[in-house]
Picture (cartoon, rainbow over the protein chains, first blue to last red):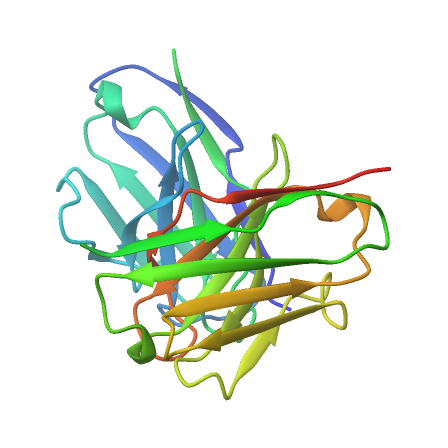
Length: 107
Length: 120
């Protein structure tokens, strides 16, 4: 199975900061990667699919990049609503594995 | 509006069985693959199973293969997860998710989840 490793596991940042989260795949997955945001007590919400395509309705401060084995999610200017946990998920194989998550906390 | 609504969770003893349901509305259910994803208390997301739009292809995580069975009834717009031989480590909030296509791909809509607790 393909393993997905996210870093960091926790990130402390301030409103207005530029934030970058990394996701690494244990084997090449082309661009078959999605990013999700989850807030406490809520279901996950898709932000990015196919590594860099922005889901409809998602603010443009979110962007994704990468291909192969290394991917990044960037928030260009952190807003109060962005404090949450973020997950990557690969869908190159039939096992749709998630990364361990990155919690973005208020500094 | 796309909606998926899970039901069927509850408290079950180790070794027991439970069937989860996910009622879909607001989209042509038979055109889309569906997944089950779970989240243990305080933990991350874990993919459980995916079924293609027709139901012909089914995929499972190693942790549930042989114990869980995914199915769908396209005439009823409903997804199911039959869970047998349940273990304490299956305790989690189980989400139903609509995928973006007919085969395994990213998810674009999720339910609010149904809680499964395995305990004696």
